Image (spheres, rainbow, N blue to C red):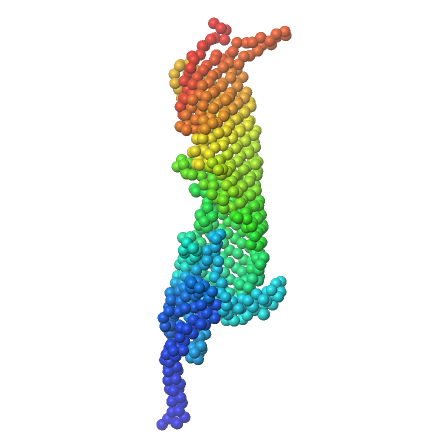
Length: 626
């Protein structure tokens, strides 16, 4: 038979179980009567500093966690007479303390905002302004921390920071909008993440994902002293942003005081510089073939100026180093500095800042866009040990890129190419009457054969040392318009050498036959020359040959006429004339009969397929005159 002590123990345990069950069962009832929505709204207002409004009765759950679910929650600025919500959410779930609830108090640590909307104010300059609360525990804690920083900005007393518990705020499927007189425009959508801060004087972390400008973005921020940042002080921070167009990271310190300062290591990587700029929306040249870019460097500065030191830059697979200086004082950002590369694709680099030549016929009709020059001031100096410009190989390159107020320019001030020296520039300058373009090329002491091969010249290419100068100016609406309406000049001078692609004896024989023939039919030889000279004036896309002459030991070959860009046609006349050879005696100098009879001809057809037609039949005579 059980002892009385055993029976009393059984009854005590049973009573305890009943008490626990009754307590658990009573919590929802007590909570529904004690934790009314007004009480919850009051506590949320006390923390946030905003007026909190809750529609409907809180739904209390016990299992698996003790929480209250609120519907149609809005947070409004107390000073806003119109009552426009700063934050609104379809549903908010807050995790409560059961013991506090039984005593009628609200003590919550974690809050989950379901489909919230954060409204920012759109400023006149296009920026946005974060909402500011006028009170609440969080604002007061920030003010106390600010006072701590103000008392000793260099080494503030961290032990004096508020130690209020905060918890975590989670947001799911939210969005951020900017509000202006024109209405609302979405900045971020599908925003999901969590901000964790156990106590205000502890380390904090923010993780979030969302869609910005149509791309999925992941953001992470962490700091051992986030309250110092909120209070305008200095604290370490680690940040990273990941998206398809760009990945960026920062590890260093930020000072959020009046003279905000940043100091740390930064890195940015993008598989496509053009796509990154299009995504960030500063504007970019349509069809620009800019490739990948990466930048890793130490970054220091403030809100008005940043210095990027020991920058390791890789542009489309070409590594380089340099120093950059970024200024934000003016109406648009300014970037200046120097970059040095071992190897560099100049067309890729220049396409970042100036509208380069199109790579296909269709692109030549696309309007040249210089709007990029309204969004940034750029002044870069660069050098490269080896470089390429299309199929042209260069060495020891010194160049500049400039963008400012309607001007976009890329200049090669010095480079080794074709066995000589090359200078080149391309400039687009927006004028009241439209964008004007200018292209210049000066190739000095170069190998004519190498220059002709690079230029794609397959007919009558001079071999020898010489100089080539090209100047073109015209309206920069598109590349076709520029070339069809260009004005300028072309000049070339070569010394002793040869002309590849001209068999002069075969040429004279075909002209003697008085029939049309293709230049290709007499291109199997090489003609030795004492010199070659070309001067042409370009007017409205038509080149007028002022002088085109090749001198051989026994003859002079000259051309004159026009070469229009439109249609790529040829309309030239020329002749092969004998040079007078003088014979010297001890007392006189007498002319000797020409070794080659004069031959006149017409050159027609197109650039790619010239044809020859004789104008005057040559008179063949024997060397003895018989």
